[in-house]
Length: 101
Image 1 (cartoon, rainbow, N blue to C red):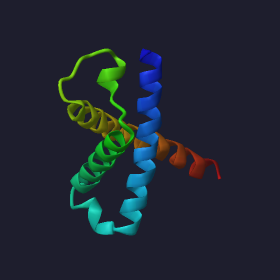
Image 2 (cartoon, one colour; image 1 turned 90 degrees about the vertical axis):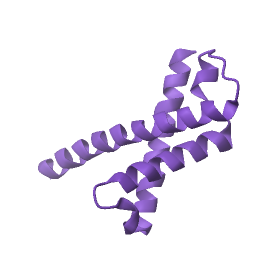
Image 3 (tube, helix red, strand yellow; image 1 turned 180 degrees about the horizontal axis):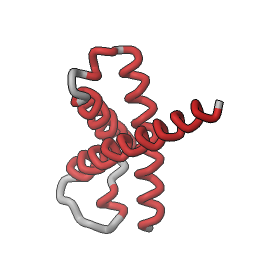
C-alpha cells in the first residue's frame, strides 16, 4: 500500500513537472522574478490533477480525513514539491549529457 502510494506520487510529480514546464514555455511571465511563479503554478497543477482524479495520499495510507478535498490539496502540494525534485534530477542529467556530447 505504501509502495503504491509513493509510486503514484512520483508519477504524478513527473506529470506535474512536464505540464508546468509546458505552461512556462507557453507563458514566460509565469516564471516570475525569483521562481515563485513556477512553484505556484506547479502547486495549482498538482492540486488540480489530484482533485480531478480523486487521488489522495492520506486515504491510501488509511488516514481518515473529514473532507476529501483536504486530502487532494495536501497531495497536490506534495507532488508539486516532488516535481521540483524531478526537475532538479532532470537538469543534472541534461548537464551530464551535454558534457558527454
